[in-house]
Image 1 (tube, rainbow, N blue to C red):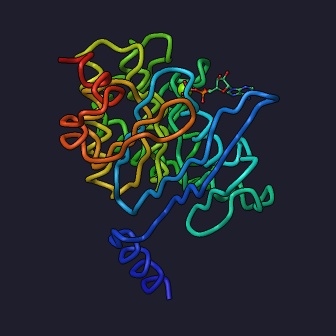
Image 2: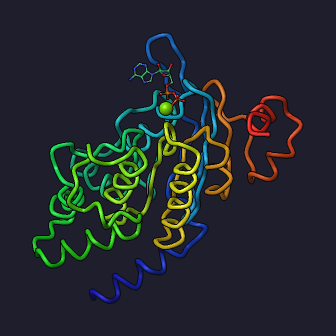
Image 3: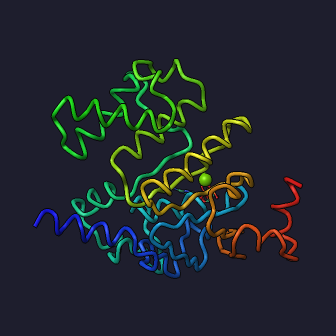
Length: 261
Ligand SMILES: Nc1ncnc2c1ncn2[C@@H]1O[C@H](COP(=O)(O)OP(=O)(O)O)[C@@H](O)[C@H]1O
Ligand SMILES: [Mg+2]
């Protein structure tokens, strides 16, 4: 029975046509301010979709609708076929074990060492209690992001890039099937940004994770994206591969590419 479930799970992880997140005609306003207008996006199994957009266009609001932190006024978001707005607290909790998100800050607990930060989701979400198993998983996750040396350090002893990597390791340690990255490279120097982008790509390849990556870093988009959508004033204005969009004649689409020559 156990093996059968595992097998089915394996097969599912390789079904590239399965839509894991379906954003279906959603709109969202705050007071009189319309932030999202009729957004549609389907994230397929194993795919990296990059959402490009300038500041204040509704990218983070979209992500918050996916995990049920915000509810759209119109339309719906389904994750693995279930309507997020219909979920009760228990189902939302369950959803958030399958959907990892990496916010801008990396959100580590400042008073805990890197090791304790990584153990936290293992004990709390996966309910692992065996210390040898915890050590093994923490070390493996840190090794994956090149941070094994920092295991006993506090977040305040780490550089911005190291904190981001530790945050990524902490989110990935529970092997979420879906990852949402909100501006993963913002505030980092170009070399560190590139490292983080490459890590995101490695995570996809290694764990077959499906991801939405919000960014305005064109190099990050280039490295990570299977598909790019461009968001402007709360709606999607273009979609394609990075190279397809790069050739676009549309003025607004061009403006993203021109910035980086
Ligand atoms: N909880 C909220 N209450 C009111 N306004 C919000 C809230 N969250 C976001 N907004 C507004 O929605 C707009 C889009 O925000 P956001 O999705 O964060 O943009 P970005 O594309 O930079 O991620 C902004 O004008 C922001 O002020
Ligand atoms: Mg944002």
